[in-house]
Length: 377
Ligand code: IPM
Ligand code: MN
Image (cartoon, rainbow, N blue to C red):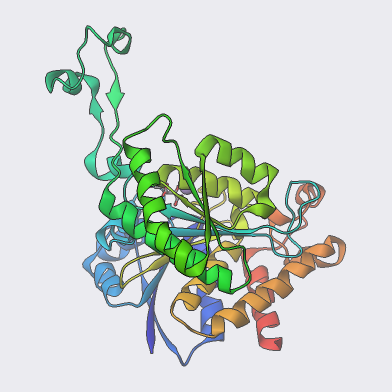
């Protein structure tokens, strides 16, 4: 029996996790125990706290968590899921399913993974905070004389970027293992390290050097290939050569940016899931945010959350993952005929003209369609 904790969070996070809940109860009711937990506004109303003890206990008691999204009050829960639990690897698959549209011409075979280091890099500021540049003067890290242009106005801030050997090693190891796993599934077995070591020689340089050194064993033993690109070059390559990509290993902030780009290559944020793993309590969430502008309107696309659920089930080794993916694959084929099927397709996936005519499905109808397909397979 696996325990799965579901947390909507904020905005459309609540609606899309609710959709995933419905799918999950159809899919594997005997094999799982579902624990619903609350964060942010919802939790505050129920327990008087945005991150109540009940939620922490539910997380700590589960084998995996599905999280919706956050923008303000539920952020502390997200921080706990990432940093508190030590989920150091953020895996973001970019897969173009048949039926989905890429904005690129003459491209139809995109299937790569972005593996984003999840706890440090420039986002170390989440834990360390930022500071005023005057502090750097006081600590004699920089002198005002030498860097006058920073002090032309009275106010300036700095942020800290940290790359450690420890974190780089374990994320590189995980990325190598994923590359080997994919090779055995028929992918190229190519690991691409993405960095900016020409500018950030110490930090990104360390990340690159460690990634290469960890990969050596895997190259010898499993014949994986390895290469590296600067992050700016990589952004271009994702657009120019998306079909050549296999596994990308990168630093936190670059992974954040490239995964949004990657998402857009394969149908957009409405259909891209992610997995944050590393601890005993891995968590899964759509790449999209809480979309406050459409929250509560029941028009959110639940597919990214449902695909995140698929990653969760896969991670727990439950066969239902395959059944769920097959259903979603079949669902995506509906996108080949908008005229007939628009009633089942979310707003972000129908053509503009349909959007203007209000011809698209509500969250509930999309979820029901996926369940109907599921039950027929
Ligand atoms: C994401 C989000 C988060 C991140 C924010 C909300 C901190 O953009 O999951 O990609 O950058 O990790
Ligand atoms: Mn992001």
